[in-house]
Length: 309
Ligand code: RIB
Ligand code: CA
Image 1 (cartoon, rainbow, N blue to C red):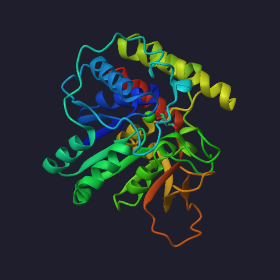
Image 2: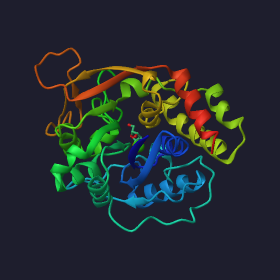
Image 3: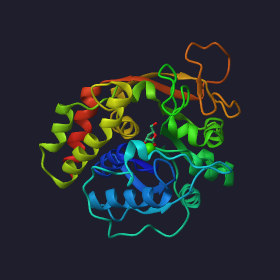
Image 4: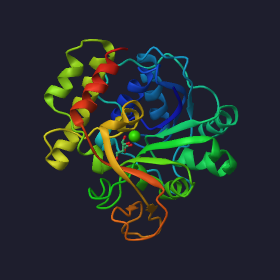
């Protein structure tokens, strides 16, 4: 049983990750969900997280809003991918539950004070995570692992030619996290671009006919259209659920321990994760970087788990 905190900017892929985690109480004790401005503004990412907690019938899990956006930088959002609501396709009513009063980074600090060995699962920009670590650097030792979706290497970027969205939105925060010394597992575009939806994979959700699987199928169908147009893929990459799938069945993924640094200065490549995959340097190997997965097993896991809700 892992204690986890999910930090998120729902986003359809975040939502699938949240549902999968909440459907797996034997393996994952979700002690809280913190939200951050990212795909859409904070008000909407918080509302969307609440919607998914309610859909999973797990309203006891606190949802605590965090940062509106990166310190000192304009928030870049992605309505062009996720729709104006950030969760187009979900087909769900507004949540009837409210966010827990408080502030995301403070919630993370409070939980690290009272629990040992929490796994942090960032699915969006790393603003809240970096803030929590900067507030109480000594609490880094209470973080068992950070399993995050972000970055890219062989696949380059999806916001600029070299930068992936979660890192690009707040490169400074990403640099703080990757320099923290905490055990990091990184799910970059190199692996998430191989986790692509297809009609049969979406049908595996839809055909179950429950409220959660129907909503999941609607979100997957909406989200894939952008990537099909953008990349010419036959389906859409499913990014954030790779984090939760790794916690449940790590053997689905392959990768290697590498040094990862973040470009924070260059106008041209700011937000790039510089992954020393071929050990060109002697820099410390601070992250296990996934580059492949068993995508059939991945989608089967997600559909089976969300089918339990
Ligand atoms: O680049 C993909 C990432 O950016 C995913 O986490 C998606 O939800 C968006 O936040
Ligand atoms: Ca996300």
